[in-house]
Image 1: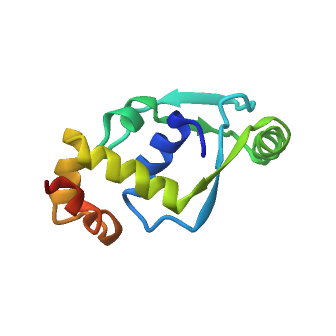
Image 2 (image 1 turned 90 degrees about the horizontal axis):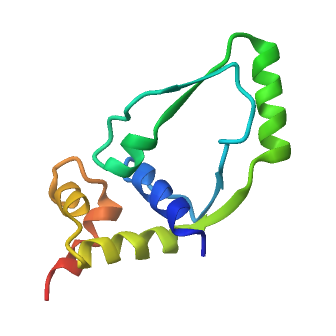
Length: 121
């Protein structure tokens, strides 16, 4: 199972799509970039909104350097769909306000809506 922070970040991004059976999460915080700008994200979850960063690359050379660093330095973790579903199910069962609001919204993805029965006693 991936680290909690990785799982939380992946799940909060996956709210917008159907998670793959297994995904590879990359931590690119140690990769070089010509500029990293802090921008508040726009999703429904504070954790990922507050940690959102935009990598600014000035040219193709910077892009290739960044990709090279990611390939060499970025720690990776496999994230299974079942881990994401278990995490969201647990958040709903513990009445996590952000997940409860999102799961009840008309824009919630079907995979999240299927987990809503966890709210019932």
